[in-house]
Length: 429
Ligand code: GDP
Ligand code: IMO
Ligand code: MG
Image (cartoon, rainbow, N blue to C red; front, side, top):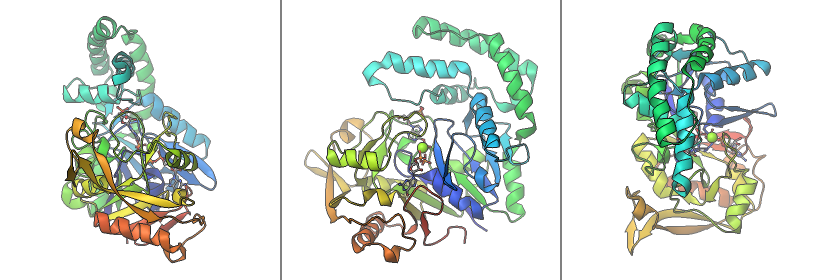
């Protein structure tokens, strides 16, 4: 039996949603273990595109989907997403969507604080998604968070919201010069979410343990990417959760020995949304071409994604931090038509070669990529279903990635649709 974790190896938007949707066919349960609706995971099935922000990307494969304790959930967004899927004929009910009683809620004041702080920072802003993610995790860490279990206890919930709203309103009005929130309005609004989601709330850790005992297979769906991790990413230009594979255990409530493999999703080039250093970033025509051909716009905020060459310093960092056992290369089709391709293999900093990702942003922002250049290919590979059919230069590009990262490629994606994929070695087999 296999239990596989999927993580992004770069700065998010690697194509995790597509690969989770694909592999969910072989799993019984799909669980998200961190992040919230800052994520935007795209699936393309039967010509239709569906973007999930909170509900695990196993929902279209009609698998049991679990929202782990490590997530932060905006219940209004969850309701909208569930209703949207239902309107598309995808069943979403207490039988197939379970929410951990320990999952923290995103509250209206979290969103307001997130937006007002970013506004106040001006050009020093992080470029958050504005969904209240940071302030929600902050309250979790300072033990002032509100959890689904509280939502189901109306008196506890009202008391918490009143006390917290007082404090947040002081901060919002006096420090952030922002509008305040109305505690009564929040209590009324969230009472409706309590009614809607009460039947979904459960002990997710117990549910997973039971499933594993019954011989079922679990797919853990990471959000964001390794370099947006709160500890290991380009701090402070990161998200507020731990995005690495180890957090699948903490954020879902399982022990490390239950994880049998970790698939690192690698976009065939690099993108980043929001601010922060990006050594292999392209500012020229090639970057523009990749951005356009790859339709690199954020699935959550619609922002243009910054584009650059593949960076194997980042990928080696990810391989180590996540214990990656196999790679899934996505968007390889986008690179077709480029005369040559660069791969960043190390960084140059003040005459020194760095092979590992530096912690200091002052250092990172002054790193120059050390690159090697490989010949490109002109062919459109999106219709190909065997790597043997790929042009030789495409195969060489893949082989070089494996050599530089030291991890085998198990999946190659050549288009957004589920079937535009080549599975070389199924992690569930
Ligand atoms: P995620 O956040 O990691 O799930 O990735 P996103 O959904 O935010 O962004 C990935 C984008 O690339 C989506 O629009 C996908 O439909 C698209 N995509 C995924 N794999 C491929 C691929 O192999 N080729 C192309 N052209 N597009 C892809
Ligand atoms: P998926 O799961 C890309 C980025 C934001 C910002 C930083 C902090 O779709 O790959 P936050 O709102 O989390 O406090 O923003 O993190 N970010 C993402 N970038 N993909 C994501 O998710 C992201 N989630 C957050 O752009 O730079
Ligand atoms: Mg995304």
